[in-house]
Amino acid sequence: MAYSTPKYQPDKDAGWGLIFRLNALWEKVDRRAEVGNYEGWEIVLDRIFSNLMYRGEAEVVDDGNGGIRDVQINDEDYKIFLKVKEKIMQVKSEMVRAKSERSFIKVQKAKFKHYQVLMFYDIWLRKFMQSRDLYLKETEHNPSKALFGR
Image (cartoon, rainbow, N blue to C red; front, side, top):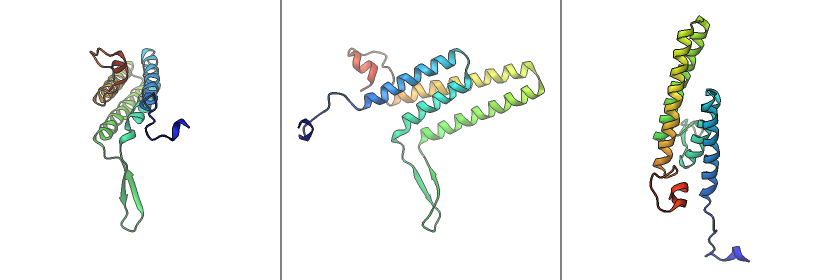
């Protein structure tokens, strides 16, 4: 039996699954961004982030009686994510106010702010992936490393 030997090494890295999943999600990001589907763009960016946070540990906050009061992720990257999501909620609120006022100029300004925040989120995720060696390398002589990281 091939799998019984402790020296068995699979010929494919299990990290490839993550790479293929992320590539498929980035394709969806581009399609949604190109047509101005801001809600869809944001949701797919959220899915990318959730795929990248697999290493983060959850911290249990004890209630003092042996129970759980809360569960949190105290990772710095997660805090950045929460701040970006807060900015997105603020700009969406601006959009609702502008639409209720029926002000074309305010609606356009809110749309532009929404676009800017989503663009920041998009770029930050790409930089986040780069910091984890999961984004395309700029120069590499071995094409497999350029596509799939270290």
